[in-house]
Length: 339
Ligand code: HSE
Picture 1: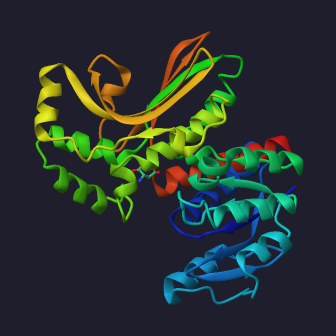
Picture 2 (picture 1 turned 180 degrees about the vertical axis):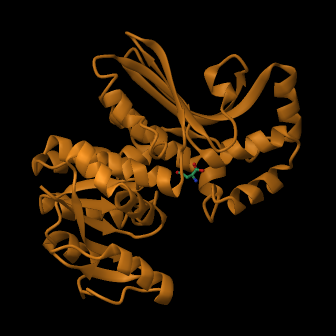
Picture 3 (picture 1 turned 90 degrees about the horizontal axis):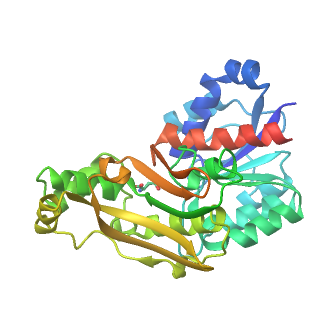
């Protein structure tokens, strides 16, 4: 059966998802029996479109490229009305991230659950600020809250622990969870000044337009909060994660680490010891022998300590149009498998 999809937000991630879906359409059908139609899109810049029979996404992409807005299939519905009234099975919440309020994404998720639609999202707001509320509501309405893309984009971190590592007790998760800061620290090792490395990270599209969330650790803190709730299964609030960024690291600190066979990394850490959870984001001097020390540039990585397998480290992309688009696809396929 065809999976009907609504996209709330049609920026980089939404367009990345559409590119993958279109390019892989025949493989998805033949390999996984997965077929889809995109029935609704709402975007703050382009407008809102709906066709219960399926939209022509290629035409819509041409319209926004030519005119900056959608021209056909327009509806007056706002995003919430669209979510409630459209015939989608799954709502992909890909609107902007707000780590202060979680809005409008939290309201979008609630409207989807209450109208018995699954949510797939890479937006960190709902998961970092209201994971339990979102999960409980999804469970109440017997739908899924799928958030693989919130941590390390499409690199399968959350699905790794709930899938292949199921049965292991995970006592800690420690990772490089922000690409911008890892890129800056890597470039500083090559002799670049902090402010120049940050500027280059912005030019290359790793850093947010306002990079404060990256360099002060707030982006990584949201991801640590999600790891605590999802991987460790411990309720954890964003403000319970202590947070320090990299803006105070100097060229002298970098040199000092080098002389001690170490390297500075912005480390997100969550540990569950004797019933107590500790969660933090802070710069740490990591010995060069540690698996996380070799992770350079914008790449992310996470090490999970397990009782049955010891330490497992996964390394991969933490951001990007196709990489995050893939995270949405993997959750859509999982919903298809389980439906
Ligand atoms: N700005 C983030 C990073 C993007 O640098 O990792 C992914 O959340």
